Length: 323
Image 1: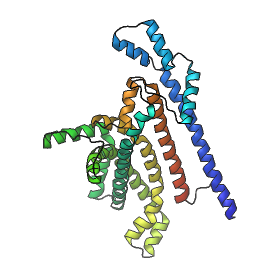
Image 2 (image 1 turned 45 degrees about the vertical axis):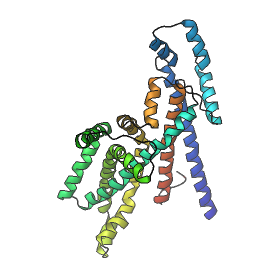
Image 3 (image 1 turned 90 degrees about the horizontal axis):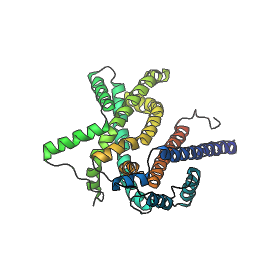
Image 4 (image 1 turned 30 degrees about the horizontal axis):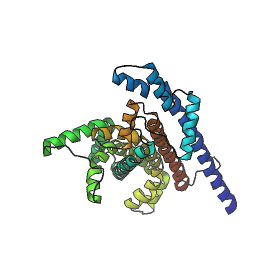
């Protein structure tokens, strides 16, 4: 029985990994071909900026960049290099794409991680408090806060923070990519992280509240109260343990969608991260940078979904590995 259960777990993980690979392959095809469908390329942009077009020079540049080859050949070259760890060269800076991307990943990772931590650490407790105090003044206040978070775009909140900083301190916060201490790093990242994580915290709070209210109406909760269990034990041991399942899904999805919020937030706060760099690369049609950054984001999204699947299988005993 134990061996059979282990084989089912192994098969479950293999199926999920295979699905990840198929998904990433499909995303790579979509990324590559959609980017080529967009009118104009780096050669057109460079010659338009120069104010003249020499057909011979343009053809030579396209040949040097490999843009004169068919789309299928370009795709195979890119995928082959990606599998070898060769991400190509940036068309704009003429530096290896890996050298351009790697220094920016830790910045965005810290910002996204702190935003996700803020979202979970604020959203889940407030959602539980709102559900436990349903119908009270505190519940209404928290619901208004959550609605405000869902309706307030992250870029607008970021602009409000910058305006408040100028009004109160007479200056805008300056981002330092190389903080000297943990305290300095926390001070630098916490404000933009809260700006982008506020909406996620509001969504997490609402999902937690709805899930908690549904669980608190179950028969086994009434049974636990009838047996003399304390309200703390009922709310946090019995109810929250089962209400957390949909919250895990939401947090996983929000971890993936945080990148979209970071694009605007990094631009507003002038943070030299991956998301802001992606916008600049799209504007210049810097194909190697755009392709690799979007693939990186796709990997993050797919891994986040895979992690949620694994957590579900661990937390919820009703999950069948044969599904």
